[in-house]
Image (cartoon, rainbow, N blue to C red; front, side, top):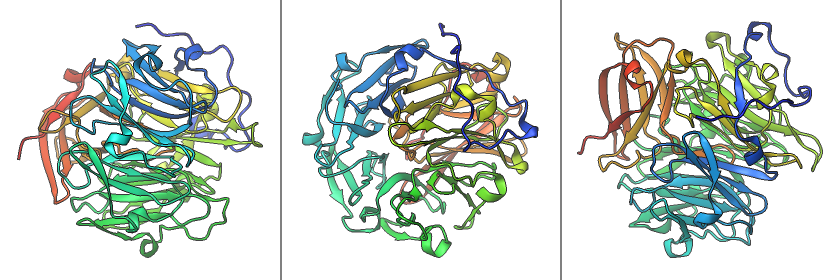
Length: 501
């Protein structure tokens, strides 16, 4: 596998927005290596989304640019080639923000939805023609979504009928929810809580109250309150005000810019990190339908004009770490001011970006993804708000022995297709104690989304029990697989297929 050497020059001194490196994390420098920087160094990069579009077993990725182009990079054994224009994706035109992969028609090939940035442009739905090309079928499918300013799209099976429905956020108008009926979409729940005007930028679907249906967290801009929409059998109630999660006291320059769902303390319940224009928030899921903001106590309540966030265990110690993109400076001169928060357990989080200056290079979308399948998750981010930008990819070059201390889990439905987003995966030790929880992502960060195997870093290589929980809309169905030996799955994913019924 071929890789390029690290960049010879790193970014300038850390910005004043980045806290000084804590003494306990002085050894936190990590061997990230820049991959094909000449190919990926294209200014105006906005949204990023990963998936195996050609079903060849490795992960490819798409990026939207301010020029209107959508770049698609085919991954061939760790070497990337730009193939988007040749396969029918736009080389210029209206700008898109919010790329999202999902097999909307159930033909086994992941399609790509691109939300338009400006309200006078239309959403595009690029049907995947067997990995050989793409055709925009938005009009035929009923997904042009006119008058919208897109930041995030969520593919979810909201009604449990086996196909993917679509939730489309809107920065300047009402959010919209579309039911999928055989590959054609019809708007539903108009003027219900999920589709009110909230100036929404980030949206995360997951079963926060563990009752078997998908709930919705909304991070809202321009001073509007955030929302936690509890799904009560298809009718939604905003639980955020009663739970103290709405953050109603904001001015118009403040607001939520995304959301990232992950079980940071390995207690089995999914938590929510909210990057803000304002102080960031970490909503700890207390497991009783309530949340507590633990960001101040854990070192995450910084005010750094945060944009995107993604959880990932980059050092394979069994705890989720957090990357946050942000920027500062006047318009046209903004520069990244990112944070790499290392999870130190009960001690909280320490920002170790000063020890890893190479990756301080994103201002919008961010995704952790193991693009080379070696067990160490890599880092991809977009840098779009300055003349020198790109959609950079950094390989995690940890030692092979440490990289193998991990487990990838790929979940499929009974039909063999990708599991519905929102599916939960947990690991347990031989005594039945929970080790970690992960979510098959529904998206949520600023314009970032991916369809990839779920990565677990492991503190040890002892056998584990893998539990998959399906969110059906009418209940939770779990399957367990005991005595999974990570050593047997070092170079491939442990595949779980749902039992029919």
